[in-house]
Length: 163
Image 1 (cartoon, rainbow, N blue to C red):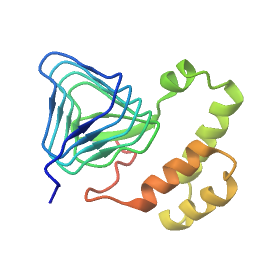
Image 2 (cartoon, rainbow, N blue to C red):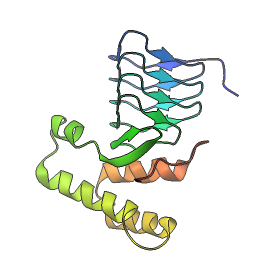
Image 3 (cartoon, rainbow, N blue to C red):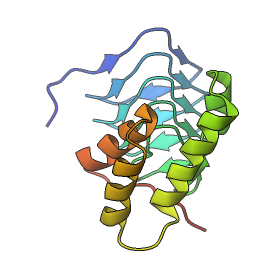
Image 4 (cartoon, rainbow, N blue to C red):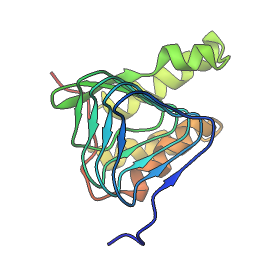
């Protein structure tokens, strides 16, 4: 169980009706649009955008720089820099708009997308693909952050690409 403390970072925007559950952790520069909701013990990284009426399940994690679409029911962990939406939310790629707004160049974005594809669309076992991406993209801090997020695990399953 939690320590009875909810932590909210700085420079964030919580629009009308946004709710942060007990023992949750919210990073810096987070936007929670109208009526976005976090269940208890949720962990939201910095520079995350949660669309209106999006809900993150208790113990859920949303990694740094991710975007969650409006009305999304997030029952699985969303990787850093991921883009997830739907009911139930599925991973639809990387947060390309957020990366561009943060000044990432085309070459950087191409390499991040290549790593994403190798990890989520490659062949073989997921654990093997994770090892391969970790070795092949060790020079990209964002990919190392995604790998660490996945390896760290959580109490919820990982949000994956899907139909």
